[in-house]
Image 1 (tube, rainbow, N blue to C red):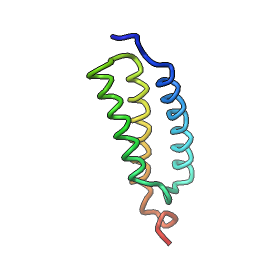
Image 2: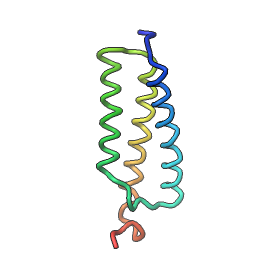
Image 3: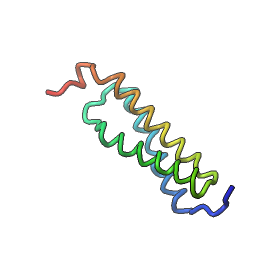
Image 4: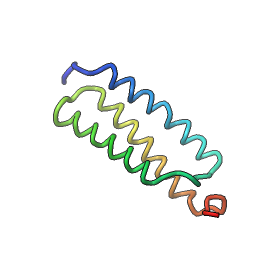
Length: 93
């Protein structure tokens, strides 16, 4: 396992990762997903998957767990989106 991680990569993942729980809690409490972009969530998820693959194939270190955690947050946001999207308050007006 390599120990050549970047503090900037870690800080980026921590900052992004700190944002997801707030978004998930808000969605869970309000059950409102109107305005949530599936394209945005998909691109973010793909980005995290690419980070995971980079860690697996080129520079495996413990930072991979931050990528996995963030990808799980995005996956949870997708689950909430599909769970609540048919509620009346989420319909397009």
